[in-house]
Length: 274
Image (cartoon, rainbow, N blue to C red; front, side, top):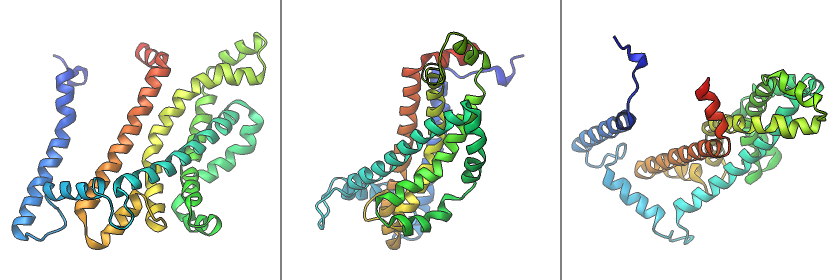
């Protein structure tokens, strides 16, 4: 008898089971919205699909009367710019500090306790401090993302580096490689795909920090727009914005997966063989 743990869906089956939760969620929303609107045609909590389509057309494809901008695209560019800067700085810190901590014992002894303690600080708790120190402009929002994401990336990369087979480092030294050559030719090629995986796991928290900072102090951005229209109970705008943020995060995750598969095909082969 074949056990269920040994059964795998085919390509069509995988598509069906993957789409099923989305279909159930959409159907559930449609039923709940219809019931609320039948009871109260002016209900704003669960707007119909037609209202959300009209709202998206208004904010995405109609110039704003005051600024002349297409609000949804202006907000998207502003948020992606802040998110890209924050994740870029956090990634650079992870490469330098994480590999240093994992490879060099003196660096690990000096920085490991500090980074571990820093990773326990709730980033949202220091947001007011960032606003006071760096002001309400872009820098405070980028710094919040860096503080929230970098310690996790650093610790993860350091542990991955420590877990490397010691034989590889010994062979490289036997062949005459110095520390810099070992970093560039042995450690870095193996850590880059691991860093991309860690970055994928950090996308959710990074968006959380960004939206929170934009909600408190910003003049444009996806988080700013959501918290601006909430006072009007404009769920026809809020729900498409939330869906758009989710789609952007999912697309970023797919891009990082494509990067690993494209640039490091040996990683998937190694996992398959193991």
